[in-house]
Length: 76
Image 1 (tube, helix red, strand yellow):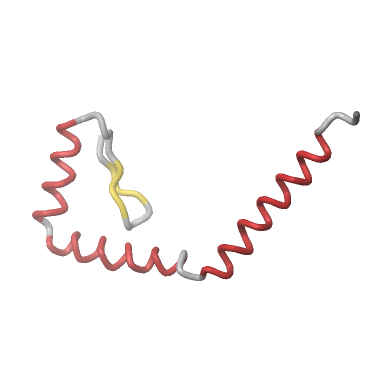
Image 2 (spheres, helix red, strand yellow):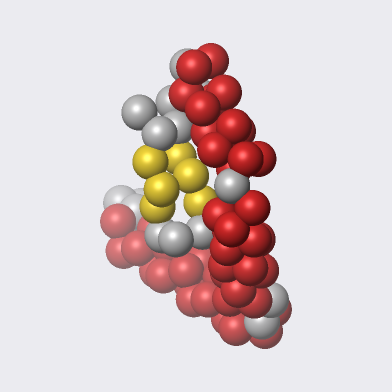
């Protein structure tokens, strides 16, 4: 079953040739949909273009993981 999610993408069963075909046909044949998906895709890209914020987020995740590892590691 093909479905539209988050207004910028289509999801489908990657093992279903029929679903892949229907999804491609829908996007190729509907100019308004194609334009909308493209515009919304570029808006989504902007979310990830702030490298400094993304780096800070990764550092935070790694620091938490290291703290959890230290806390859960058995004392020798």
